[in-house]
Image (tube, rainbow, N blue to C red; front, side, top):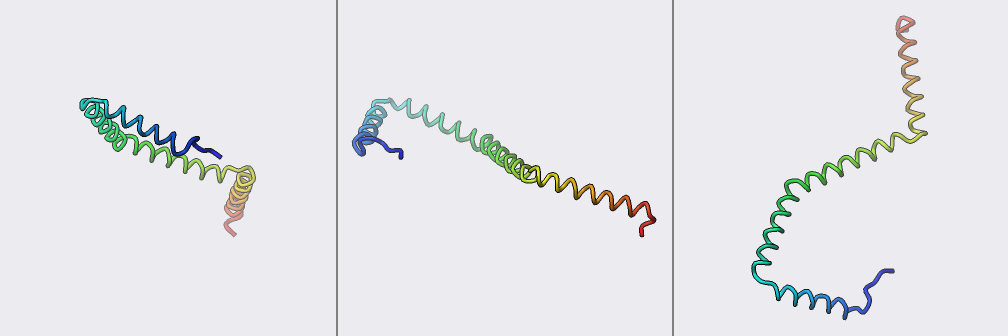
Amino acid sequence: VWGVPLVPWLPSLSIATNLFLMGSLGSQAFVRFGVCTAIMLIYYVLVGLHATYDVAHDVCSEDELKDYSDTDDAAAGEKATAKTADVEKAGAGDGGR
């Protein structure tokens, strides 16, 4: 079991420390932070979101291929393909009876 020690004192101290540090920053730091956040958000929407979708789609396709590439399934599929080919050859060789 994972937990934070000294709850709620340690998290409260951490929040207070961060608020103090943010309060000691100038307005230019917040402007820079806003600009950087906006640039990264635009990048994520234009590039990262599309790349995330592509990776998720590729992983899904690989999982589907893995389902068909199990040794038992692959052997059964090869046997069925061979039987189908043999039947087609036999039908073509005897005049289509």
